[in-house]
Length: 127
Image 1 (cartoon, one colour):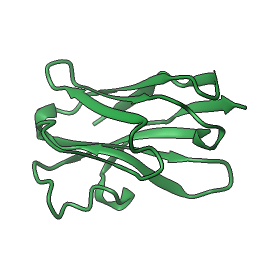
Image 2: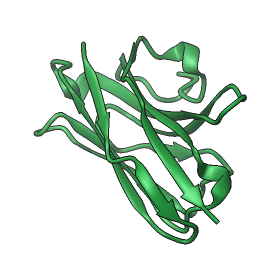
Image 3: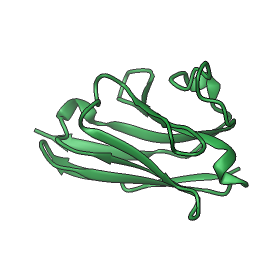
């Protein structure tokens, strides 16, 4: 399974970015997907996750209200729309996937609950 993240870049504080992740996973609608990020000198942290059908989503408190995760199972893509960006959002953003149709109890907020990872895309937010 290959995951290819894109959409990162340099943006001013208060701006927006949409990250995308193209997956080779088949069938894609059987994969739970997530976004994580890693800031310089820090560990990888959960950002958002979406269930295999797209019917359930969750967000880290740090991005809740500013981020929207979505997926298009027909196009094998998952996206993360980030608004009102802050300098503390600066990080490498990774998409991740796991062959799982479960949601409740799946520990989707833990990086260890994902088997497949993309290469990451850098988001830099200037103040």
